[in-house]
Image 1 (tube, rainbow, N blue to C red):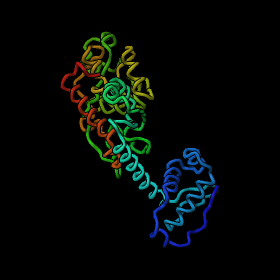
Image 2 (cartoon, rainbow, N blue to C red):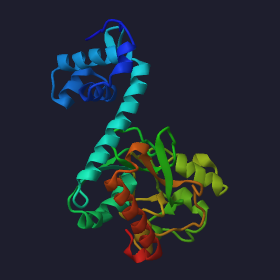
Image 3 (cartoon, one colour):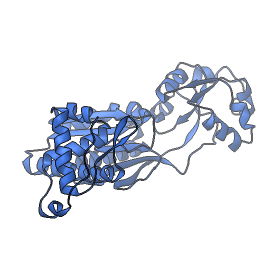
Image 4 (cartoon, rainbow, N blue to C red):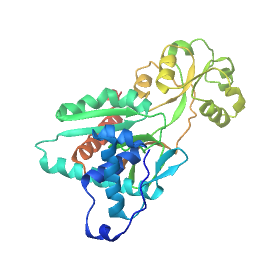
Length: 315
């Protein structure tokens, strides 16, 4: 592990800009949490990273790393500086791509919730690529539905809005959640539009009982009656179980909309949850002028609007 001596003077910070190598080093160390990981990412030696951080300490006039027990950690002030550096480096990359492009080229990393990635994005992203064949797209998914912290991501499609500094947030889709099941499962019951019949149904859950508890409460039923059935860790697994007639789940009427319209799923009850939330488009401010991101946003919003107007074309 490394420990650097206290900086001698702040005078040099006034007279010079840090080198791009040093800026890349502190950004990588802050993001990766260790010098050796940064060295691997930047394809240099660990001593080279150490040297760049030492030069940067001299230029900035404050410590970058400090010892904490047996560990060496980046200081809070250096971490805040590294976030600014990350935004600046992204802006440089976006500007370079913009002035160098012939047609739309480059890469695009999208983070989407697993349900949106599986239920909509993967079914339509080929249309975007057909229009822009020289763009390389990577789609990541996170179980943290509103998370926008991954610095490798150009734009996020989240469920819910967990706003943070330097991230632009735009509503994308409103959504409602309601009990959904297959016609075959529904046929097992008589008068299934009576919520009390749920006492004999297999309830399927995503992670915990919360959605069913809230729906039971909304419908005048004891919330503890939701504490049974099967809990899954992924909404895609819940969807597979529902389609197979294994039970009834609180489902997303947007992402499961095509199944509803084409009769593969049924909606036994009118009441629904989450009128005040939905999907959001969240983008780090430094990426807002990236031409690939701008084009993807335009395509995404247009494609979703077409799906809303002509639901038979939606997925």
